[in-house]
Image (cartoon, rainbow, N blue to C red; front, side, top):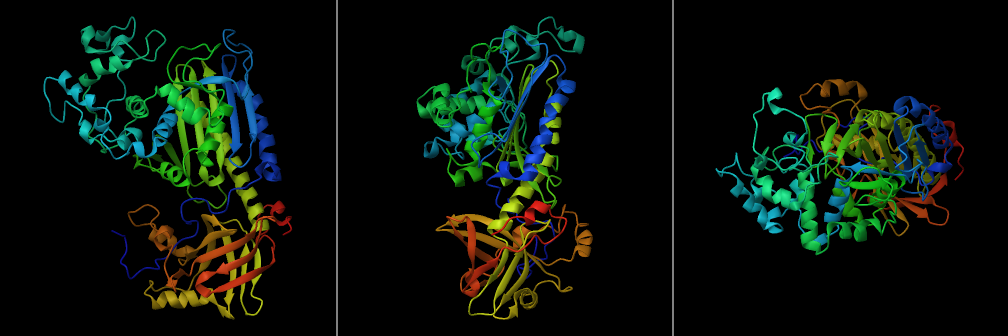
Length: 570
């Protein structure tokens, strides 16, 4: 069901509302861009500032990487003056930290790498039928007391939507010297809880601990009711991986992920000289950067499978946070100059005094990993650090992408024997601005307004801005882009946005294929790129059956665009 009648196929759009995703190709050589270089230089000063955050008792390692370059863009590290000598004496990008729940990303990728051996829509009982026996640990069997395992799918487990309890161990009853009666809790028998968990004084929970105790837990919700954070679902998925692959979980992850990505500083068990016991993965910030680059460059999963994975599975009560598998997805509209919405895929983890934050920004091919350890290692500090790094870095990558697009795509394209001209400009807004669009002497933007009216678009003042965004489809030297037709004047946006749906005026997704002619969309633009020169030489307009040759690369359209954008020569 759509929000509008089919007659309004050309529903008005709004500025800063391109389709979700990249609006220009991510920069292929970010480290060579002067704006990026300047930001990275400024970020190096954060190492000195880290002393104020972590003081004498905590260490930090940060790696910043682009999917398009082999070496990290920047490594930052802080070694406290007082360091536990039982561990490493060096803190850098290769120092190994515990990463806690970042491990969940490896588990889900491992599951996806099983391919057609599993179906994410299957009930987990297909792979672990013994889960049904857990209900025998309850005196009553109903929806309140026992988990509906038949309705719990692999997808639900991977995306925090299973409704099952978060853990089998780390029960309050296991805490030494704690008198539950001081908190209004009764004394209970040792059979009522599992004596295991992640605390240093407990043994890690085993599958036997799960089998003997987890049925005593009741469901938090039914499957797919609401996302609730927990750990147990991923232990169950690890068991599925073992059952389907015929290997131990550790061996499977090592062979399917760590070795192909050359992650030599990542371990599923405690490496030598680490100071904390078993539980969760151990990795370096550089290795997590390798992992992120492997994800975004489709080294293990196909492009389609990766893009399906990098999508939300549920919203939360926060307008800025969605949930993926197992991503914690932050939505921001203040990271770029153009002010559009960007999805930032994160996974944070914590075990004891170890904390980690793994971040992917697919629109810019950016990977950020932050690891810390020590008494002052706190989640708030991790996100505070990311807030220091991401805004200036994303804007620098935005500027670098504009600079490269100026060279590769922007400029004037003309027909040799027709009175046809298309001029594309870089400015401060999303994508390429179509400054002029003349075919056979006719102004297509003016014609589009008339055509829209004839096809039943809402009446209003003639307003049209046309912008191009990449379709992320390439082949045979051709690169596909799509036009976005902005037909709502800015002064009308506030009134539209007063409707109960938040940002109601942003409807670009609804209008991406509005008019076709001879089976080709009017908004279809295809660049023919010279692979040797790395620049577009012509522009194909399939609906108009014309190919225009590139005459010049033009100049940046607005003086507020960083000066270096105008320095490239095509």
